[in-house]
Every structure is written in structure tokens, then in C-alpha cells.
Length: 586
Image 1: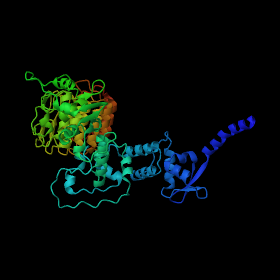
Image 2: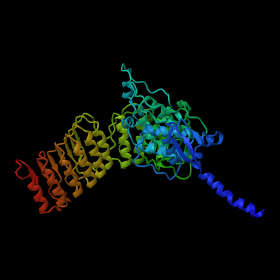
Image 3: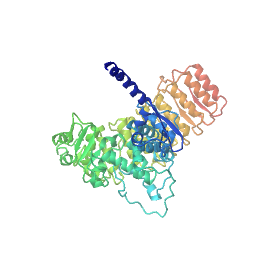
Image 4: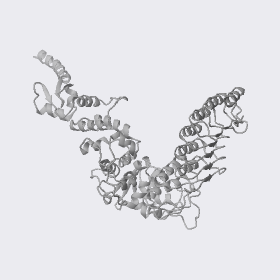
């Protein structure tokens, strides 16, 4: 008996293994039969229930609502190590259908995550027009709604909250394109890994996508554990400002302070902000202190600590502290009347002498302003590139000029003012709005490659600027390459001064490529700093090749490039030999 029992014990695992390896057949919607391992099938709750509770038909389990290809795909996606092929050609709509089917099959979370990542990789970072094309959706907004894009509203606004009234329009909205109908669960799951910035852009696609994006955003930003998603502004008690900041929407924190009467807590970076405590804190300077204080070491920070406004381990990040003050602070902070700024009642600001924290505070208030600032000059402050880029983005969205220029001036003069990369970023932001400026003097500063990149982006869209002076600005290869890309599309700049920057050969080669296609530039200065220029023979020869096909350039300065030898100079001279009136300086 003992021998017999031992044999049975040995055979039991073998039988169990055989059962796990057993294959089952499933008949899909299209009539095709799919063979799956029993283990793979049981990972999907719907199939598991079917196998447990129903009998098969001739050994085949019917699944008439799912395509065979979907069954096979979901089985692959159940593998945590599955890698989505880079050559995959599923459209976004097809991926949403796959989400729908995976939910019906009650597939494991890992399968849904694979599909969500695929959708996010296609959508993240896109603007509304691109999203329309990817989704295959035609806009159904009327002209008044197009005038005030839905994606300009705060990210936390719940679905069906009435948008600000727009002027009445007699234009009827266009008929929307017909799209497949998916369940609300599938649509919301499809956007599970789409970032906040892209969800905000989705509001500008169609009315239905706007409603969907509102639901997903409100759930992600405002939902408390165990609580339903708020459906009214006065129901919102919590706001995740970390996601807003990371999405480039820090100003929504200030808007929330004005729009959300029940707001009690801000969350982010592992900390919680007590909104009521921030409102009660005295953040002002003492009357005796007339200096613009440092946000990091001044009265405001001390008051926030004393009132226990922010709870969490260690020092909270600066971004969160500024968001707290922008949302609920009062009094004069860093020299600014924060409550007036939040309520949109300030039209003129003294913005000299800002440190990074103070500049960030101003940037957080821009979206809350209901009127456009009449006077705003952020130049010559200790801003870093990140802060300036954030300010430029918000300034562009709100139509705020940041460098003290006006839209109707024709000359922009900034030479020799010790300007840095951040200053050039702000100037470039303003140039995109200016319709009559023809000349930009920005020489003898220190804008560097980052500043040059910003100016290059402005040159791609400014259609009136004809003369650009960027001499002596510590611009090297990267900056020169960015300007070269702008020259390929710019159709108005006729004079460009880049002398005194010591641009190396790679930058010169990039500009040479631009000269092959640019049809308007007549004068170009690439002189080096006095006897220390870095364009050598390779750069000179590349320019010479470009001059063979460019018949527009009539003046070229390559002086003081000490790395350039006789071979490089001869190549340039030969390229323009015989051209009447050509001015070549070597």
C-alpha cells in the first residue's frame, strides 16, 4: 500500500502540470478559432468564468464579442516583459478598442498598462491640432469657442462647469466626424498614462474629448481617496499642485485660490499644504525693511514655518512653497501685493532686482490676471533658463510682453546691457508678438547658446525683422546651429551679425548649409573675436561650397579667424571671384 501511495504522489504533479499545459480553443467574433493555453486563458477573468461555469461546444468556448486578433494580442500583453514593437501601426482609435476589449475580458492590469503606455507615447507632448489628426476627430466648436480655446481653462475645472461667457456667434458649429463609440470606462482608462499637459490640450479637440479630459484631469488632480470625483468647483477640497507644476501649469495654483472656495489642501512632492493656515500667515516684511527680500530666507518663509502651513519630512521644495503663497498668501511678499495679483487687479509691476524665487512667484500669478499688464519688464534679473522659459511660455499664452518692449516699436535696442541667456529668452518671447519691429541690436552681451536658440525660434515666426545684430555674445556651435535652422525658413532677415562669438567649424558648416537654401540674406558677419576666431579651413571650405549656389549674399566678413589658413581663404575667394560689387573681408 505504501508503494502504491508513493506512485500516486509522484504522478499527481505530472497530472497537474499536464492540466496547466492543456490547450483550449476559443471561437472569436469573426468565427476564427484561437488556441490558448489554459493558464493564459485563466488570466482573463471573463474567460476564466466561462471555463468554470459553462460547458464548451465541441471543446470550443464561444467568445462572440471579441476578435481573434484581440484575444491573441491580449495574451501577449499579459506578459510583464512584453515589449511593444516600434513598428506597430495600431492607430489611437484601434488602441482604445483594444482597451475596451481588454476591460471586457477582465485582463490583468499589466495588459492594460502596455496599451496605456502605447497610447501615451503617441499623444504626450502633442498640441490640439496634432491630437485632432492622431485621433481622427474633427473640431465641433463654434467660432466663439475657438476664440477662447477650451484648453486655456484651469486644468482642475470639472466636467460641465460653465465656461466663461464668450461673445455670441451666429456661426453654427461644424458637424463632428463620426467616430467609434466606446464606453466611458474604456475612454478614461485609455488616458490613464497621458500627461496633464496633453490632457489640457485634448480639451481643444472636440466637445466630447473636452468633457472626457475634464473628467480625467479632475479625477487625477482633485479626487481624494475613497471619495467621488468632484462635479462642482465648490466640491473641490484638495489639489495636486505637483502635477500642475510638472505640466508647466503652475499658475493654476493661483487661479485655484480665487476659484475654489472650499479648497483646504494642496498636495505635492510628499507634502501637504494647509490652505487656511497660509491665508492666516503674516507674510509681509516689517515696515522698516524697504528691500525686496529673499523668498528663501525672509519673513514669508519664517511665517509659513511658524504657522505649520506645510507638513512633511524635511524642507519642502521651492516650487511647492511658491505655489502655496500664490494660492492663498496675502500682504506684500517679495515686494508684490500677492492677493491683488491673484485677483487680477494689478496692471503695473516694478520687476527690477528679482531673484529666481520672486520671478517664479510672478510667473505663477500671470494666468490669474484678468487684465493684461500694461508695463512688464523682467530683464536684468537673476533668472535661470528654466525660470525664464516658464515665464516666456506663460507670457505667450497670456499675451504679456516681458522685456519692456511695446508691440508697435520698430527698433529693439539692447546692446551692451550685460544681458544673460534668460534675458534673451524673454526678448525672443516678445519678438513673436511684434508686427513692425525691423531691427534688433543685442550685441556685446552674454546670451550664449541658450539665448541664441531662443532668438532663433523667434526668427522662425517673426515676419518683419530684417536686421539682427548678435555680435560678441559667447555663441558657440549649438547656438550657431539653431540660428542656421532658422535661416532655412526665415524669408525676411537680410543682415545678420554674428562676429566676435568665436563660432567653431561645426557652427560655420551649419550656417553654410543654411546659405544653400536661404534666398534673402545679403550681408553676413562671421568675424572672430580679435585674432582669436575659431573658424578654420574646414568651415571656410563649407562656406565656399555654399557660395557657389548662393547668388544673394553680397557681403561676407570672415576676419580675425586665426584658425583659417591659406587653403580656406583661397576657397572662399575662388567661390566669389568675378562677382561685381561683392564685399569679402578676410
